[in-house]
Length: 291
Image (cartoon, rainbow, N blue to C red):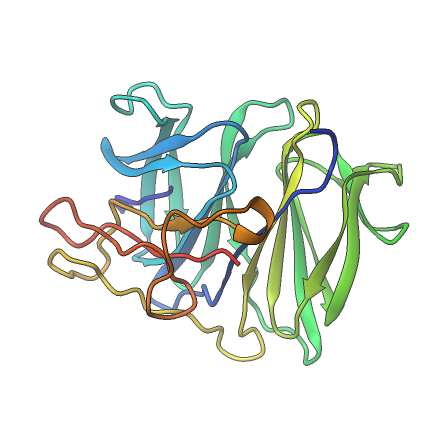
């Protein structure tokens, strides 16, 4: 079944903390977040020919949004495009299953061309006192090792692969290095592994262009039924399962300075712009907050 959906110098460290959120779908819906990891490319997102998200900037996150299961088709264009006839990425189909959490990442492949990858987020239970750390390689760079101190804990990770570790809660001093080496190309940085929380770390950007960065996304509540925020429509007919036309998104304030363009809303921990509905059907938007 097809549905209409929305997405949306040097080797110094840049870290974005994205969407610390209870983002797990219930048994009847899928949960989707979207990460923009293509440097120097502000984009528009079209769904079935309709502009859904405009001026989506690198490092921004949209979501999470609860969706009915189905296949959602998107096209990503340059921000000044008149329509979706010449997409920079896509069109791509996103097949979503009920009861599953996803993150769609727009990023560079290993050779530096824009692409998109749909990741399934592991939200299974963790043992008491443990958290889950997943590292995803979505950068224009060769295979890498992830170091804890000077010791590799993940080896030979290639774009667009991921590896997952269940770890005691605490702070991990992490760095990313070319496979077989210990000289960091990203980091070191302290990554918090919290009790009962899934932490997803994305290595994104371009090694050649010197803009490699880390972004993190978290999902909590893994010791019990993972919690999720109920998204409130901002207009339209309020019909269940309708998909957004305008997505809220936000960006880290602490690392990049300035205010997010969308202020935090009054409800829940995933807060952002109030969804707007440009047409008569159910509202098209979701809210998020970077921290």
